[in-house]
Image (cartoon, rainbow, N blue to C red; front, side, top):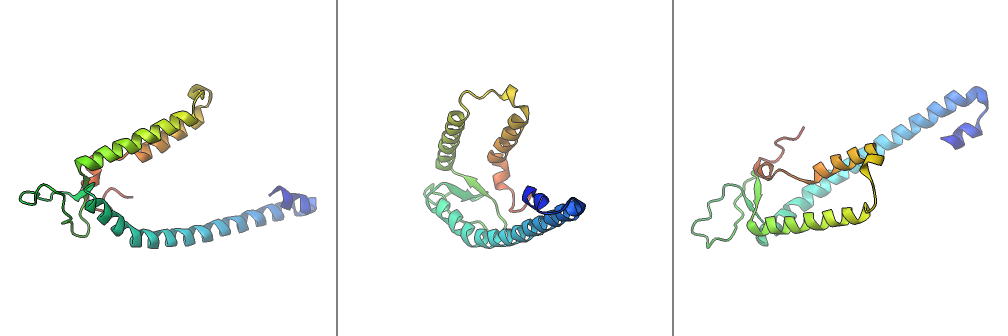
Length: 147
């Protein structure tokens, strides 16, 4: 922005600044739409395989699956739109991931004092809340609670 403002006469400063802002906004909107569409396509392609792999490795199972008579192992019986729940092994794996994440964050923030940076502390708290999921929400139908 500063380069644009320095490149024009004072009389054209408002036009140059608003023009640069407009083109920057259009670029962000266009690239955002492309990225969003691409992300949707990739998730649609990869998520079923990821869920199947977690089910196959015994970390996830469809909610409400009656496991009687199947040898106690998790089985994939969810229909489209059904929820999933972590198995005991899945919860143990999640606990290890959370512990590793907490340790890494503690290492990165060593010596940092939240009271000296209140805005950053609020942002870190908000981000942290996004990484922790209510286990009950894992059994909600896909798309429930969104919006």
